[in-house]
Image 1 (cartoon, rainbow over the protein chains, first blue to last red):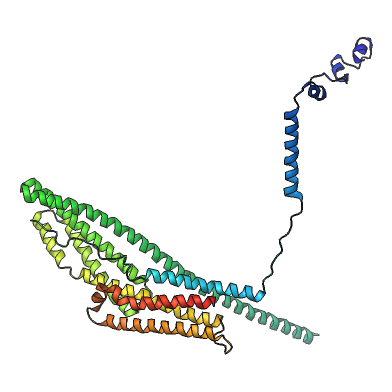
Image 2 (tube, helix red, strand yellow; image 1 turned 90 degrees about the vertical axis):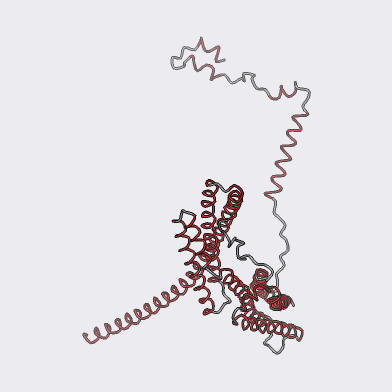
Length: 122
Length: 281
């Protein structure tokens, strides 16, 4: 219609360049529906859609569904205190055992060097 | 009116004075705490610096020992060559190599005694007077070695180098002092473990409420057994130190180190095992 009007319309405010903008019909470059129906092998397309859907569902399940909280075992506060107090003592015992190992009399790391005291001329 | 104003002023002055006193007291407390924490930080910093120095001294010693071994090999070759060929060239070579190995030997010994000195300084189980006595002995030997090292580097002829080698022979008792100090260090390490085990035992006893009459009898028996082994360690250590005070006995202790120190080592090992069990009972 715009094409028809292009030559007949004597409205001076309309520009010829604007004619393509008036066209509402598609240019038939991308027609998904007809392309899909023409293409007999739609399996890859279905697989792709199913994979995308599964990924999306997986993402939603993992990140958005409420997580089940693990039942929290509340220790007796006295027991917790005892454990806390024992730890530094255990550490001291462990450290002393290490120190004792270093004090093992069979380990000597500073023995006198084996040097020649009789360097001389013949 | 003026009376009321004066009274008011007095009250304000009193309040201000009181605030000033409290503020001064708080500042003083803060300064004292800062001093204490600074002293503690200083101590930690000194210990870390000492450990770093010991590590560096050990590296220097290992490096100088390796250099000495290389120079000794070269000296042996030069010695054999001169002994078999008897030429002026081989003699000159021998003089140079002899001087080099002698200089290197001095360096090794200086580095070794420096390392020994730092270890003795850092040790915690030795009585201070004994520690200072041996530190001074080591310093003397290091001083003699340094002088010899400096003089030798100026010598070039065979006779001068020979003279220097004879001077070295006068620096005596190097190995003896080393053995004495090593024996002291070995005993001090065990002494330190014992010294730390005693307060640990006390802390474990109070943690387990062993001072209370209601403590389990099994716990009490275990604690008494631990006290017994610690007591045995104490008496064995006392015997060791008494022996160490006698002249020339430290070298004997060093030569039989395992035999001499084993009883204390076993007592302490048993005590620490019991302490670990006492915590878990």
